[in-house]
Length: 184
Length: 178
Image (cartoon, rainbow over all chains, first blue to last red; front, top):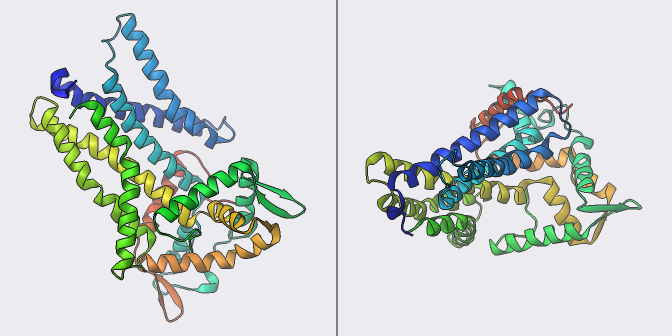
């Protein structure tokens, strides 16, 4: 059905309005949960908050429309709203990963900023937490915990899921015409 | 254009970005811009994708709504927000294949079959990582070396870091990893 034949302005406004409302509700829930300090492994809660909460909101609206409390649900508008919400939530989850992860590059820039206008020589650029256990060590532990790698007799190997992910990334980079492993 | 076409178009946007990125990446190398930072190339590719996105937004705005200016602005805002949200995700996904230590470790193991844990620690030592990051920040114009001293050349990434710190405060998270 052509948009113009449905309901004009509401088809344009509803997805934008509702997606932003969904995103704000999820963001506020996320902030309140984090500030409460009652949850461990906070990162694991992001996907349920940003991806499942809107589904619950949609189901509530559907239930409301069945009982006649709210106007009937037009699925194409909901799909549009959910896609915008998905794009905003995906962006936020990626930003959160960077916020929670402490970027070594930003840490270096902060140290340089503190020494301006003279700057710093190379041997003084590293912040105090720049230790192997906080860098490679932490990453290796994350990969082991996620099941992407396994360790046996001091040797690290990829698990089946690790091979699938790594090969997928190789295909992606080759499609872009780039070397399998980046320099950075 | 109907809503289904628009939804399909937006869902296909990351695939479109990947194709544009592959073209831009090859054109950059063929025209002597191969030394451009990969982040600059992917940013350019995502921005170029705004051209068809704006066309999609315009078509949507033209056919949807009552035709008044507010509806047109809303329609364009909807399409551009959605496209650029996916663009942001694509940029970070690609950037992870360039800079993420997790990805690098997995790629090294894939290439070698298996590697000793100690070799990994040596390969990605703090000293090694500082060197790589300095080179990247110089390439991106964030840092500059003057007579053996490193100084700030651009404050964009630093500003991002300060926004991250402010957000950590909002979420009551630690400001330092130790």
